Length: 223
Image 1: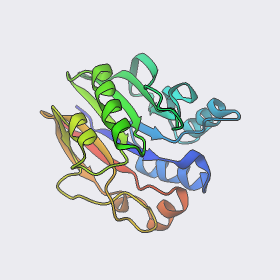
Image 2 (image 1 turned 30 degrees about the horizontal axis):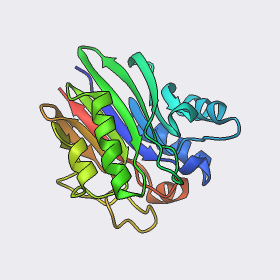
Image 3 (image 1 turned 90 degrees about the vertical axis):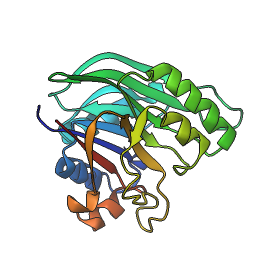
Image 4 (image 1 turned 45 degrees about the horizontal axis):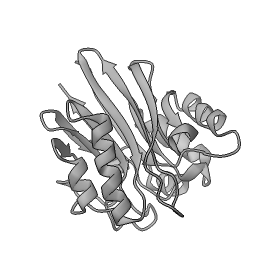
């Protein structure tokens, strides 16, 4: 089977250097991109579609209907059962969502879910439980901005039955200018053979800093 590259990235509503975002995506060449903070307001879906098109991708699910999280894929990926879910709203806090779909490349099929957890710890725990119920445990990937480190309870809930691919290297993802905390992750099925790829192996650091305030997480699925 050919390589499957997964990437998750918080693009901060494209408020920074949008062209740098496109360049990073073209150089990274993900097959599946899990997006956080996609455009949410004026012409949100058109802006997301334009980003996908210019980056060699298509929108599989999400965007404004999923409160700013999205799944983008290459045309190599077959997309089935796309769905946008709003998670339980906490008063006075931002609406959070889940963008998901069944994705297939060759003989590998899995459910992918893009998420962006909130800043409130109690809400994160509740949302983690809701996300697991939606995506299931059978061959599913959860990826996104978790807004807590790997020792956090929400992260631990999402990681049940899944591998935290970035755990060994433990490279910080926030902030892009001064990375100190690893709060972004790709969690894959335990049985998968995978390889974490540092974005600095692919893209110049100045491009990453210009693009947004998070560093992307990139994983190659092997075999």
